[in-house]
Figure 1 (tube, helix red, strand yellow):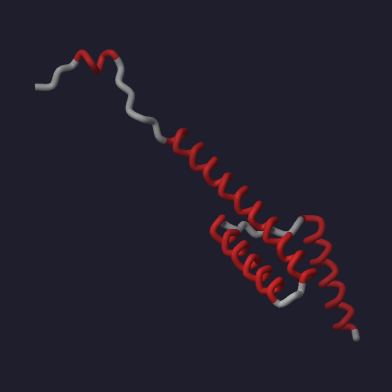
Figure 2: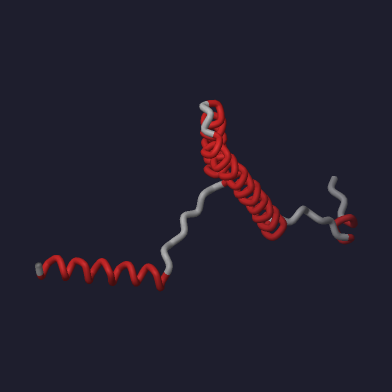
Length: 104
């Protein structure tokens, strides 16, 4: 009995800690989000073909939301890539002094 109470208190302490500190969020790539969209779309089509319209409509809404999240993730990846390429890569620029040199 004492062990159960102690285990319950420990579980409560861990749960409270996660509640206040926040659980780490999972970060999915755009490819994973696209796979989720495909899976939900296939489940939507299957449900509608089987005549389960309520389930099909709910899955269809989930598919639309998953597609929106995929597009947002893709847009964010493009934005980050554009930021880092312009920040860390500079196209070669020629100054006036460089034109004065002639290579023979």
